[in-house]
Amino acid sequence: MSRPSRNTDRLLLDAGRKLLPQTGVSGLSLRQIAAQAKVNLGMFHYHFGSKQKFARQVLQDLYEEFFRGFSLETHKAAPPEQRLIAALTILARFVRDNRKLILALLQDALNHEPEVIAFAKANAPRHIRIIAGLVRECQKTGALKELPLPTILPYIAAGVIAPNLGVAFLERAAAGSAAGIPLALIRPAVISDQAIAQRIAAALKGLRREP
Image (cartoon, rainbow, N blue to C red; front, side, top):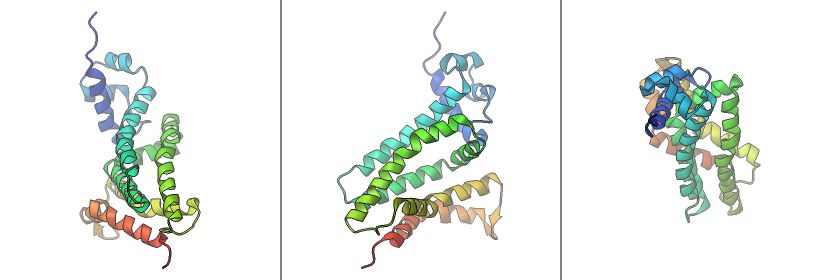
Protein backbone atom coordinates (compact mmCIF):
# COMPACT_ATOMS: atom_id res chain seq x y z
CA MET A 1 0.00 0.00 0.00
CA SER A 2 1.42 3.36 -1.01
CA ARG A 3 1.91 5.98 1.66
CA PRO A 4 -0.20 9.17 1.52
CA SER A 5 1.49 12.24 0.08
CA ARG A 6 3.37 14.32 2.62
CA ASN A 7 1.63 17.38 1.13
CA THR A 8 -1.85 16.12 1.99
CA ASP A 9 -1.70 17.20 5.62
CA ARG A 10 -0.60 20.68 4.49
CA LEU A 11 -3.48 20.89 2.02
CA LEU A 12 -5.91 19.98 4.79
CA LEU A 13 -4.44 22.52 7.22
CA ASP A 14 -4.59 25.25 4.57
CA ALA A 15 -8.22 24.32 3.97
CA GLY A 16 -8.88 24.64 7.68
CA ARG A 17 -7.45 28.16 7.71
CA LYS A 18 -9.80 29.18 4.91
CA LEU A 19 -12.88 27.59 6.44
CA LEU A 20 -12.57 28.36 10.16
CA PRO A 21 -13.25 32.12 9.82
CA GLN A 22 -16.58 31.23 8.22
CA THR A 23 -17.59 28.25 10.35
CA GLY A 24 -15.74 28.42 13.65
CA VAL A 25 -14.76 25.10 15.19
CA SER A 26 -18.34 24.14 16.06
CA GLY A 27 -19.60 24.59 12.49
CA LEU A 28 -16.68 22.94 10.73
CA SER A 29 -17.37 19.59 9.07
CA LEU A 30 -14.91 16.95 7.90
CA ARG A 31 -16.50 16.82 4.47
CA GLN A 32 -16.07 20.57 4.10
CA ILE A 33 -12.38 20.27 4.92
CA ALA A 34 -11.78 17.39 2.52
CA ALA A 35 -13.70 19.13 -0.27
CA GLN A 36 -11.82 22.41 0.23
CA ALA A 37 -8.49 20.56 0.20
CA LYS A 38 -9.62 18.38 -2.73
CA VAL A 39 -8.51 15.19 -1.00
CA ASN A 40 -10.25 11.98 0.00
CA LEU A 41 -12.02 12.09 3.36
CA GLY A 42 -10.03 9.03 4.41
CA MET A 43 -6.85 11.11 4.22
CA PHE A 44 -8.24 13.42 6.89
CA HIS A 45 -8.70 10.51 9.29
CA TYR A 46 -5.25 9.19 8.42
CA HIS A 47 -3.50 12.46 9.25
CA PHE A 48 -5.61 13.92 12.07
CA GLY A 49 -8.11 11.38 13.36
CA SER A 50 -10.63 13.89 14.70
CA LYS A 51 -11.96 17.35 14.00
CA GLN A 52 -10.89 18.52 17.46
CA LYS A 53 -7.26 17.51 16.94
CA PHE A 54 -7.29 19.08 13.48
CA ALA A 55 -8.78 22.38 14.64
CA ARG A 56 -6.27 22.61 17.49
CA GLN A 57 -3.36 22.17 15.08
CA VAL A 58 -4.70 24.77 12.65
CA LEU A 59 -5.07 27.28 15.46
CA GLN A 60 -1.74 26.38 17.06
CA ASP A 61 0.16 26.72 13.78
CA LEU A 62 -1.37 30.14 13.20
CA TYR A 63 -0.61 31.29 16.73
CA GLU A 64 3.01 30.07 16.62
CA GLU A 65 3.60 32.03 13.41
CA PHE A 66 2.36 35.16 15.19
CA PHE A 67 4.24 34.47 18.41
CA ARG A 68 7.62 33.97 16.74
CA GLY A 69 7.60 37.49 15.32
CA PHE A 70 6.00 38.90 18.45
CA SER A 71 8.62 37.38 20.74
CA LEU A 72 11.50 38.42 18.48
CA GLU A 73 10.43 42.08 18.41
CA THR A 74 9.72 42.33 22.13
CA HIS A 75 13.10 40.91 23.14
CA LYS A 76 15.21 43.30 21.08
CA ALA A 77 17.73 45.57 22.77
CA ALA A 78 15.56 48.69 22.85
CA PRO A 79 13.89 50.91 25.48
CA PRO A 80 10.84 49.24 27.07
CA GLU A 81 8.34 51.74 25.66
CA GLN A 82 9.63 51.13 22.15
CA ARG A 83 9.28 47.37 22.66
CA LEU A 84 5.79 47.83 24.10
CA ILE A 85 4.75 49.80 21.02
CA ALA A 86 6.19 47.05 18.79
CA ALA A 87 4.33 44.37 20.77
CA LEU A 88 1.00 46.19 20.57
CA THR A 89 1.50 46.88 16.86
CA ILE A 90 2.15 43.22 16.03
CA LEU A 91 -0.76 42.04 18.17
CA ALA A 92 -3.18 44.60 16.73
CA ARG A 93 -2.20 43.73 13.17
CA PHE A 94 -2.58 40.02 13.89
CA VAL A 95 -6.07 40.58 15.28
CA ARG A 96 -6.92 42.77 12.28
CA ASP A 97 -5.69 40.24 9.74
CA ASN A 98 -7.49 37.39 11.52
CA ARG A 99 -10.49 39.33 12.78
CA LYS A 100 -13.13 37.07 11.19
CA LEU A 101 -11.50 33.97 12.65
CA ILE A 102 -11.17 35.53 16.12
CA LEU A 103 -14.80 36.63 16.06
CA ALA A 104 -15.85 33.07 15.15
CA LEU A 105 -13.69 31.68 17.98
CA LEU A 106 -15.22 34.11 20.47
CA GLN A 107 -18.64 32.82 19.47
CA ASP A 108 -17.38 29.26 19.93
CA ALA A 109 -16.06 30.15 23.37
CA LEU A 110 -19.42 31.64 24.36
CA ASN A 111 -20.99 28.37 23.25
CA HIS A 112 -18.51 26.47 25.46
CA GLU A 113 -16.61 24.82 22.60
CA PRO A 114 -14.00 22.87 24.64
CA GLU A 115 -11.23 22.89 22.03
CA VAL A 116 -11.39 26.66 21.65
CA ILE A 117 -11.43 27.24 25.39
CA ALA A 118 -8.45 24.91 25.85
CA PHE A 119 -6.55 26.67 23.07
CA ALA A 120 -7.21 30.11 24.58
CA LYS A 121 -6.19 29.00 28.07
CA ALA A 122 -2.94 27.55 26.75
CA ASN A 123 -1.91 30.45 24.53
CA ALA A 124 -3.46 33.79 25.49
CA PRO A 125 -1.33 34.06 28.67
CA ARG A 126 1.84 33.82 26.57
CA HIS A 127 1.53 37.18 24.81
CA ILE A 128 -0.39 38.82 27.66
CA ARG A 129 2.48 37.96 30.01
CA ILE A 130 4.99 39.66 27.71
CA ILE A 131 2.88 42.81 27.36
CA ALA A 132 2.36 42.92 31.12
CA GLY A 133 6.11 42.62 31.64
CA LEU A 134 6.79 45.49 29.25
CA VAL A 135 4.19 47.65 31.01
CA ARG A 136 5.94 46.97 34.33
CA GLU A 137 9.30 47.91 32.80
CA CYS A 138 7.80 51.17 31.53
CA GLN A 139 6.42 51.85 35.01
CA LYS A 140 9.84 51.23 36.57
CA THR A 141 11.49 53.71 34.20
CA GLY A 142 8.79 56.27 35.00
CA ALA A 143 7.35 56.27 31.48
CA LEU A 144 3.91 55.03 32.54
CA LYS A 145 1.70 55.65 35.56
CA GLU A 146 1.80 53.25 38.49
CA LEU A 147 -1.66 51.82 37.86
CA PRO A 148 -2.55 48.14 38.50
CA LEU A 149 -2.19 45.80 35.54
CA PRO A 150 -5.89 44.79 35.75
CA THR A 151 -6.64 48.45 35.05
CA ILE A 152 -4.05 49.03 32.32
CA LEU A 153 -4.42 45.87 30.22
CA PRO A 154 -8.20 46.15 29.59
CA TYR A 155 -7.74 49.86 28.85
CA ILE A 156 -5.15 49.05 26.18
CA ALA A 157 -7.21 46.15 24.78
CA ALA A 158 -10.34 48.29 24.50
CA GLY A 159 -8.54 51.12 22.74
CA VAL A 160 -6.14 49.19 20.52
CA ILE A 161 -7.54 45.70 19.86
CA ALA A 162 -11.33 45.84 20.19
CA PRO A 163 -11.97 48.21 17.24
CA ASN A 164 -10.61 45.56 14.84
CA LEU A 165 -13.20 43.10 16.11
CA GLY A 166 -15.88 45.76 15.80
CA VAL A 167 -15.17 45.91 12.08
CA ALA A 168 -15.36 42.11 11.90
CA PHE A 169 -18.77 42.24 13.57
CA LEU A 170 -20.04 44.74 11.00
CA GLU A 171 -18.65 42.59 8.19
CA ARG A 172 -20.32 39.46 9.53
CA ALA A 173 -23.62 41.28 9.99
CA ALA A 174 -23.32 42.47 6.38
CA ALA A 175 -23.86 46.00 7.66
CA GLY A 176 -23.23 48.49 4.90
CA SER A 177 -22.76 51.29 7.40
CA ALA A 178 -22.65 52.19 11.09
CA ALA A 179 -24.04 55.43 12.49
CA GLY A 180 -24.54 56.54 8.90
CA ILE A 181 -20.88 56.02 8.00
CA PRO A 182 -20.28 53.57 5.12
CA LEU A 183 -18.26 50.48 6.02
CA ALA A 184 -15.94 51.27 3.12
CA LEU A 185 -14.87 54.39 5.04
CA ILE A 186 -14.85 52.74 8.46
CA ARG A 187 -12.36 50.02 7.48
CA PRO A 188 -9.37 52.27 6.63
CA ALA A 189 -10.22 54.59 9.53
CA VAL A 190 -10.08 51.68 12.00
CA ILE A 191 -7.91 48.84 10.71
CA SER A 192 -5.20 50.51 8.60
CA ASP A 193 -1.62 50.47 9.89
CA GLN A 194 -1.90 54.23 10.40
CA ALA A 195 -5.11 53.89 12.44
CA ILE A 196 -3.54 51.20 14.62
CA ALA A 197 -0.47 53.35 15.25
CA GLN A 198 -2.68 56.30 16.18
CA ARG A 199 -4.69 54.24 18.68
CA ILE A 200 -1.53 52.89 20.30
CA ALA A 201 -0.13 56.41 20.63
CA ALA A 202 -3.40 57.65 22.13
CA ALA A 203 -3.61 54.74 24.59
CA LEU A 204 -0.06 55.22 25.82
CA LYS A 205 -0.50 58.98 26.03
CA GLY A 206 -3.34 58.40 28.48
CA LEU A 207 -1.09 56.18 30.60
CA ARG A 208 2.01 58.39 30.69
CA ARG A 209 3.08 60.03 33.93
CA GLU A 210 2.31 63.70 34.32
CA PRO A 211 5.44 65.87 33.88
